[in-house]
Length: 331
Image (cartoon, rainbow, N blue to C red; front, side, top):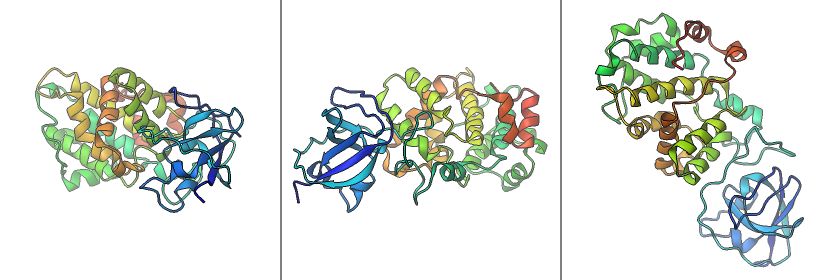
């Protein structure tokens, strides 16, 4: 049985990024030696849901090399006896996003655990409707006159916040008089609120591509620009995107404040990786440094870009619309 091979069908186009890669076109058949898949970490059925890099042959071009398992669909077993490929220490490959055209079902690993279609995945990954309004209200209150002269984030430890303030923000964020609270309390409330969101801020369909970008692009500036493009994908729920716009703009302002409030982009990223990434798909298996780099790079480039502001208001919480109309987006 060691001569058996697995066959896959490409669902998405993939353009080679390294000399050892091979390009894919939708419909290509790929043959992978069973010996190349049977690593010490292999568990029964892993070949049907590949999430890392595979090494095999494109039967259309007869090229041999590496390709991302998230871009293909398992077909079955063939008896060709191809030589085993070498195990390259590659970063996590990207998950196909909304900018690509699928020719079949969404690949395993591109959805939240349990199996789902793209529509189900987006529904499960959408933060509560009022979440962007809460983040906007808190960041506006944090940036009130004189805020640059007070330290906002002096620890990376998990914060706590007044229960009455959190409850009021959940009920009607626009009506909460945040100015009566100290800036340190508001900063802790912002992190605590994000920490307690019931679903991921980063949807699973984009998560592995963000991690892959952080691993592959060394320059923080270039990495931040690419991360912006990824998060602008149609696969990013609008509420999640708007929440990250307000949060990352605020953190960018803190990093550039020049006063006692100023903190490095890396420190701020370390302070926020837990609330931003704690629910993300496979996040427990990823080096936290990659999460830090994703946020750090976004902070350095000035935060996530606001897109499609006017049409986008249709699905937003009313409190968020009224705040935005007053120019409170912090952009």
